[in-house]
Length: 453
Image (cartoon, rainbow, N blue to C red; front, top):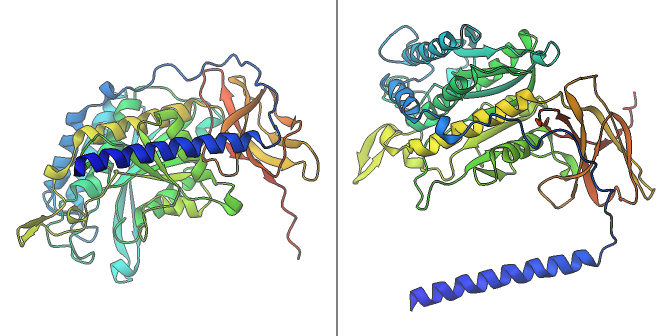
């Protein structure tokens, strides 16, 4: 009987869904038509050749990285930086060795840097403490675009049940050896290629002590003269315990004013478009409720930054000192990970960074006008680029989550969408390369009045 009721319930839900779609389509047909001219054909292919496939990912290397970091016992940021076998310094050494091996295989094009610094936070008892980030940089080949970096990272520090306890075991397999493994594998997959923009692969410390590593990474990149084109933060990306897997990785992104979106949200849409709807689940919030990650300093700086996290977390295996209580096992251990899923995440990272680093620079100064008129007018600027095919004008209903292409134009300047209301849609512009790579969209916003003195 229960099975029959479940089947009947499923049929009711499907019928209700179909009815809702039918009603939506019928209601939409009652609205005035606002179709822009058909997009002009571009000479650019739909996507750059040479896509990273799942079979390119070395799943064993991912597991080896996680196992090597877990073997350090704890990687608490306030543990020893000088002990080669236990503590945060052990984690740094093992990450550093892997990045150096990738750099050697790249013919020395990948530069590996240990960035040492001090910082204080409530989770260092407000006293300055030592931290180190390991950063690998693959310079871009384009003289202009090389000043923009597309970044991926995970944090190699870990914590037990108490964030102030540097002595207890804190294996941190999922949080966040998995994210470090994904960043390392992304570096391996891309280090042999040539990209117009610069690529950065980082392993950060101090995340559990207050996003210290991410805050420092932003400052480090600025010191190197690099603007951040996009940041993928891999944090807790190693497990997929729910039945029916593999499931999609969640990509968290915060929004902007008036529902218009934000650079981070348009980066998230780009990740989904590049990696595939079947691989990525968009979550339109900056992070999980009441929690944070190393992408947030970038978000707060107005930069495109998102967080990748596994589909459904098991809190028994995060921020827990390993133990068994009442027959229930706690602890962030490798046996609870799904390396097939982690390999999927690494593929998402690598293909996203590859395409974005091959794309022309994103447009700038995108402005929307045409209020109190029947037409939408978009204007934007862009520097000359012989590898650019043109620009796609994007639009969406204010209630739609994704962009559609409204028109293609060859040159920057102003474009008019005749008969398209500025009230009913949001608009954006993105650059399209002759190789098919597309930049992150830039929202066209109304010009804000200058602030009064």
